[in-house]
Image (spheres, rainbow, N blue to C red):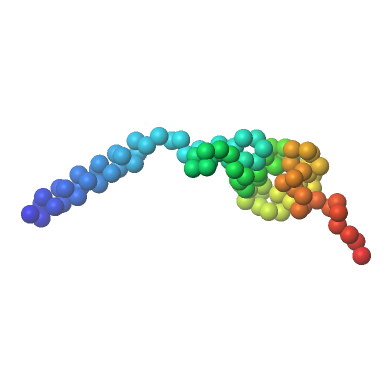
Length: 105
C-alpha cells in the first residue's frame, strides 16, 4: 500500500510539472505606448504604473530596469520627469514631479 501511494504521488507530481511547463508564455505585459496596459478581464487597456514608468523611460532616455532605473528608483523617475516632463507624451504622468506651479515663499 505504501509503495502504491508513493508511486501515485510521484506520478501526480510529474504530471503537474508537465502541465506547468507546457503552458504558453503569453504572460508578457502588453503596453499600448500611452501608459496603458492590456487587461483581458476588462477587455481593453487600463492605466498601469508599470506601463507609465516604461513610457517615461522611453521618452526621457533613462533606463527602465536596474537599480538606477525608472521602475525601481523613485528618485530616478523624478529626475527623468524633470528632464523630459514637458514632452506632451508624458507631461500628464510627470505632473507631480515638475517644478512648474510650485510657489516659493
